[in-house]
Structures are given as C-alpha cells and as structure tokens.
Length: 283
Length: 271
Image 1 (cartoon, rainbow over the protein chains, first blue to last red):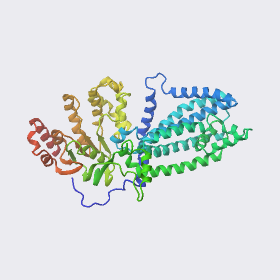
Image 2 (image 1 turned 90 degrees about the vertical axis):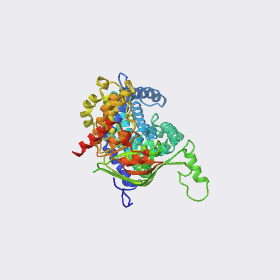
Image 3 (image 1 turned 60 degrees about the vertical axis):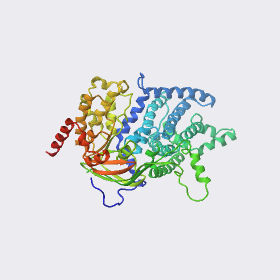
Image 4 (image 1 turned 120 degrees about the vertical axis):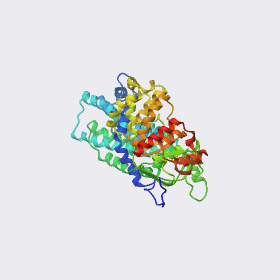
C-alpha cells in the first residue's frame, strides 16, 4: 500500500458524458444478466400455475374479445375490423403503460441490488424494457390468431411493424431512465405518472376509432376527434398498429415519434449525466 | 492490473424525510426565498459518512478494515466497489469487483437453488457457462444434494447461508470486497468454509475485508486501515494498526491453533 504523492484528478468526474454513455454500453454488455432476469420476472408471476405465462396471452384475449364485441356494437364498427384494431391497440398500450408505470419505480424497486452490487443503472432499465418486450411477444399471439380468423390482409408495408416496434422499445428505455431517476428523488412522481397513464388510455384512440370519428357527420365530434392528433401517445400506437392490421403507412406518425425519440433521449442522457451517481444515494 | 485509487473522497448522505422528498417542497423552496440560487439539496440534512478518504490499493494487497460500529466500514467498501461515487474527491477502480456484503441479496426465494446459483454468479460478474461448470462443485461443497432443485424458500437459514457461501467462494474475483457477518453457520461447516474462503482470497487480485474478528483479519490480511468517525485514523501494517486500535498486540490473544495455521499459511506463501 502506498500513499499517492500528488492530487491530480484520477478519472473523468462523476458528472460527465463519457460516464453516462459508459453506463449504457456496459449495461448492454451485461445482456446475459438482464436477459435472464427479465425472463425470470415473467416466470415469477406465474410460478406454480399450470399453464404459466400463457395466462398473459389468455387474459389479453379475453379482454380484447369482451371489449371488442361491446365497443364494436356501441360505435357501429364491423367486428372483423374492430377486433384486431382493438387487440393490437391494447397490446401496444400494455407495453407503453408498462414502461412508464414500472419505469417510475425501476430504481426504487431495485434498491437492494443497487446498494449491494455495483452495476450500471441501465441494467435495471434494460431488464424492465426486455420484460415488456417479452409480454408483448406473448400478447402478439392474440394478434396472430385474430389475423388468421378474420383473414386480415397484410401488405409489404406491414413489415414496417418491425422498425416501429424498435422505435417504441427505444422510447421505453429513455422513459424509464428519465422518469426512474426523477421518481427516485421525488417520491410523488409514481402516483402522478400512474394517473396520467390511466387518463391517456381513454384519450388515445384504442377503444375508439379516430378515423371513424374524424369523418363523422356531426361537426362537433369531428372537431373534437382532431384533438387526438396533439396526443403523442396516439402516434406511438399508430406507427405500430397500422402495419399490424394492414393499413397504409402514415408519415406524420413517424415524424412525431422520431422527433420525440431524439428529444427524449437527449433529456434522458442529461439526467443520466447529472444524476446517475446520485441514484444509489437516493434509493 | 487491478488497482483502486481514492483521493480526498467524501460520502455525504442526504436524509430526506417524507416532506423534503416531495416535489412541492423543492419547488416552493426555490421560489419562496429571495435572491441567490438555492440548490435543490439545500435544507436537507446531510450525514457525512466518510470524510477525506485517500488510499491507493494495488494487486496483491490484502487489507483489513477495522473500526467501531458505524465508523464507516461498510460505506467505505461500497465506495471501493463503485456503488457510491464520492460526493467530493475522486475514485478510480480498475478491475472486476466482486462485493460480498450481504449473502442474501440477489437471492430469489421462489426459484430453485440451482437457478439461484446461476443468477448470483451473473451478479458477481461471471458468465452463465462459467457458473454452470461450477454447479456440481458448489453442490458438493454445500452438501445440499437434491435440495438444490427445490425452491429456496424451503431452505432453512443455515442452508441459505451455505448456498450463498458456496456461490460466492466459487468465483474468480479480481477485486474481492468482503463484509463481516459470514458466520451464521455451524462450526464444522465454517471450518470447511474457511479453506474455501482462504483459497478465494488467494485467487483474488486484491482483498479488502471488514471484520471485528482479529483471528480472521490476521489470517486473511497483511495491511490494515482503521476507520474512525468516517475518517482514516491509521493505515499500515495490520499488526501495528490492530495494536493501536486495541491498545495491545492482537497476536497475544490468539490460540495456538490459529497461530499454527497462520504460520503455515505464510510459509506456503513464501515458497
């Protein structure tokens, strides 16, 4: 053991861009860990049940079919269009809501791990997003079934679902970082995000059809429906739902989503740069 | 080459109570007072857990941390592991850190012993393959047999400690940080664990060990750091640091058996 003779800075300071990026890259390298934990989380919820994670699929199917039959009648929509429309909307919403609601508690819930094991913060974020991707995969079986039952016509443009899902996943990660760090410091945030997400479920065209109301013969309804365009959640649902139910590509949705992705990641990186090292003190 | 360098590092914990932790308070606080920029952390009481820590550890160092309860030993271990980055000062850690602070953390009661071995290993920086290769050896050491395919919640406390110790002592750490409290097992098992612990320490590039047990410290460490109220009171040769901490030479109190073991170990090292 020796005593250092001079007091020059040793490493890039705690608050630096390089440390923030390093958090993401080293977190990504630990795929084995968060990949395994994400699976574990899924299996955990259904341990000792006979059909296990298949319950995820079944409960979504029940919800989509039940709501679909009711709302198709209420809104005067043909069921062969409305059921896949609703089911896909619900699947996407589950992903979005999961990233936001669980994102707010991503560090708070992992307090034990954060305080006992040195790991990049992004490990917890990637685990969360991966878990949501796995949920999405289970739920997507319902979509496959509905497409087959109703003979929905898919086109080449349906392949856009893949980049669209990628965009949504990318957004899930920044949302979890941003809200997660802020909520760790200010514990009022999780209930706030919870109620906003619940509200947005009804404000976003998932159980109602934006285009049908937009072209409504009643001018007040058409005008009110236009407001949905201001809702960023609508564009996220649309970029993925349109290709999945064989509808045409809408440039506007992509522009909005990609712009938000850039702004969101910038904010998340800023938060990660300034407060990354504080999270273990705050949890 | 593994090393830990810490210079002038402080660890200050903000203590938020339910009120200061809310957004409302922070917003009102910054708006309400006239003039001057008030940091969001202002007005929050702070605990200075560590003050002005400067140390430099290199490959081959075997450091014992001593000090009273609350002196900052566990916090220093967390600083050295990189969990806490210093609020002032700086630290640099080169090497793969394996912190063994709490045997229970990262253990899931609902999954089997085998799965827990894998997960705990992943947390300690091992790969899945490496852990799979070690499971049979861990099974043999822990003497848990068929229990390993049972969920962890069916284990007794002692069995859990065995499993955790088995995993922890099977890894190849570059920097090993050990916190005390690895004693909750029956003495026969501890004898077995002692050998594994010693060989783990020998495999590791750098050891920092916080303990109240002179015997363990003398056996595993060569140098010592005495922490007092969050500051380094003394650092240097373990025997002299322990002597000034205890006020007497610790070697006087050791049993003949322990002395034999230590001298045997140092002969082994020299050859």
